[in-house]
Image (cartoon, rainbow, N blue to C red; front, side, top):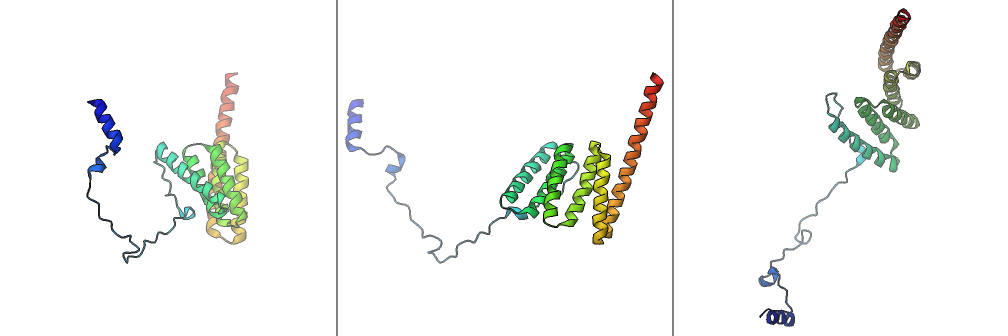
Length: 199
């Protein structure tokens, strides 16, 4: 019997799918354009206008890694298509993410890249902001002398442009740097005194 059915299906050679039994044809509707409707206009989405939300200090490590990945892809896109001004902002956002993750060497590198691009684009406001942030990263690493050089450069740039608000912000950062330098100096003196008394 099986052999007979096999021979019958091979001779007739029709498909055993369920669609074969559906003998009614579906009604075809005309396309939207021929039906008198206008086609939908889709505006291209540009990566250069994408803005990462402001970074909040209470973000988790996972959310920071998501922001890092998204910002890295956006920066790669902007660098590929030579949109250097947007890429400098992307590098600054990446550096801020790395500061929150306590990865100071990566943050320093991305602040330097952002600073180089902002200087090429003559974006002095971004350069001043990058120098202030870079100084804080260098202070956290322990390069207090280099941090002071960056803040001095930012102050000279702000005063030469006549931007008093930026000059005041740099002065506040210089005060913080001086207090940090004094705190580090007093800690090392007390440590050296403790070592001398132990000997």
